[in-house]
Length: 349
Image (cartoon, rainbow, N blue to C red; front, side):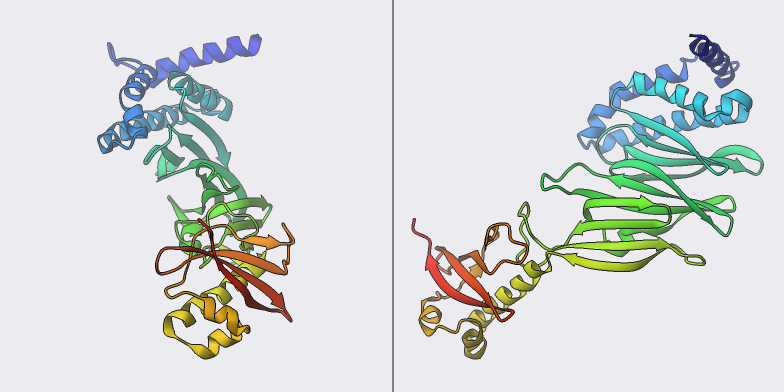
């Protein structure tokens, strides 16, 4: 109870410091609540007119933190800053506002809601001796801050921007390694530069200087939501003297699936080109070759493997569509390390 009373008293003093001499002007917290109620619902629905409102909300949060840092003492403490931000969260239940210290920097991971321009990592420090906003990064996804070991005395941290679950055990992820350079705070490494914007991760872990990522691969034959498809696991490490992270290991999980569909793709290309030699190699039985219809093309569907759930199956059935639109089932078997088509049948309708 004493601690709560102390925080309440400190909060009252902070409010007096936040807006001295602004007679009649609504409290910053109330302005935040009014703007949030008025505009954030529209912003979450993708209304571009709400962008200006989100910028105003970010500015209110910036003012709150910078004023508290400038006041110094208990008002600049992490506990007090978080207490103030919790008030903003209470004013708009859709917000998640967390702040922490990374070296001499104060770093906020903020999310006002779901939608573009509603998530930001904001970095506060000293600009020409005065507290101020050093950098602001606005992305999609839920941000979280992970401090890492400084490099050559430069403070740095990893920011994870996590999107909603895809429904297949993965979620969109972007990682940014952010480093202080004098008065600037910049992104020195990003998964967006390495993997592009479409990274969907099943699992990721950061332990000390080592980052592990397991993510989806997209290749001919990949279908959303299917089990047992090829994924990649990469290991990255902070290396002395490196500009960012360095990849030190990689391995494919369920590598057979991508290799199998490379073989299947050869079949479809050979059928289209009339390549009799390749067809004979992939379909040794002349009777099966004769059954293959014109215009056969792969269908996006999950494969049936034998034995079911096997890490290295001996047989796979895939879906295809003939040129006349009829669905077909192709059955493949592996022998001597090679896949061969052993049966092809139209699906009864």
